[in-house]
Amino acid sequence: MSNKFLIKSAVIPVAGIGTRFLPITRSVPKVLLPLINRPIIEYAVREIVSCGISDIIFVMGRNMNIVKEYFDEKSDLLKYLKDSNNFEKIKEQEEISKLANIDVVYQDKALGLGHAILQSKSKIKSEYFLVVLPDDLIFNDINAVKQILEVHNKLGGTCVGLKEVQEEEISNKGIVEGKLIKKNIYSLSNMVEKPEIVNAPSNLSIIGRYILNKKIFELLEKQSPSALGEIQITDSIKNSMKFENVYGKLIEGEHFDVGNPKGMLEASIYLTNQNK
Ligand code: G1P
Image 1 (cartoon, rainbow, N blue to C red):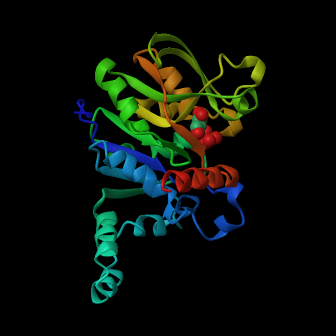
Image 2: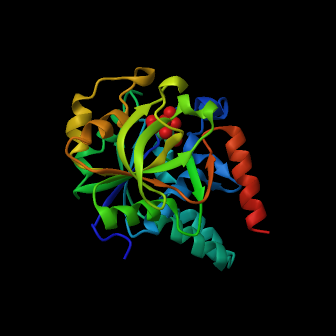
Image 3: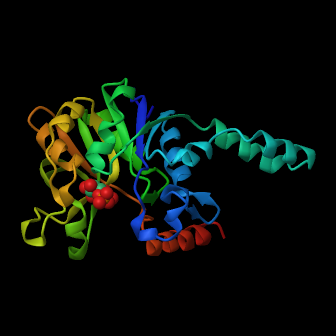
């Protein structure tokens, strides 16, 4: 079973303004932008529920209820499809509204990823929980959440997804330092958010998959802002290393940053070729 430690909840931060997608994000939240015909948020939700975790918390802005509504039951649509005997479409539409138990918390100020995750504190019931950043879309037979869950199930502790990145990407990412302990698994001793290249401890970047200990909330509550003047989850995970083993798993698969138009286009082409 992939979820031995009974991680019950997953958090998806969706409050991002989507600056790189302006002007469409003036009206449409970034996570509803489609990869072909499906919004990127649905990929994140499906990845999570395929691992047996069905309680999902969206951290979002007050004007983003449309994101949650995407997963609601659409009775008028179902009636229309039933009346026109479109049974194949009915099945899929019903499935989307039954995928997960979706709950919502609001982030009223854009104070960073750490601050976004902190808003979900009251909703987390299990000792460990999952965080998925929908901008990091990864295609692989064993999906990225399953890959970090497997590490957590074997070793316990906190686990983040990792990717080797080019030099020019280093100053936009969380970069880690650690020791390879098994194939593709690192025991981490340091991490820095958006370092200058000269200060970067490696070329291993965090990608948006995290298994975190609930104790991270106590650290986030005290966390001072750092990179970009924001409260960074990277800083709190680093501080948790005093009491917590932190592992990194090099994620296998095709990774796309769908938080920018080029990545979205590349992911769409990849998916189209896969479905040929
Ligand atoms: C966030 C994290 C960063 C991580 C990245 C992965 O950065 O803060 O550590 O490497 O996601 O996508 P953001 O993309 O929000 O600037």
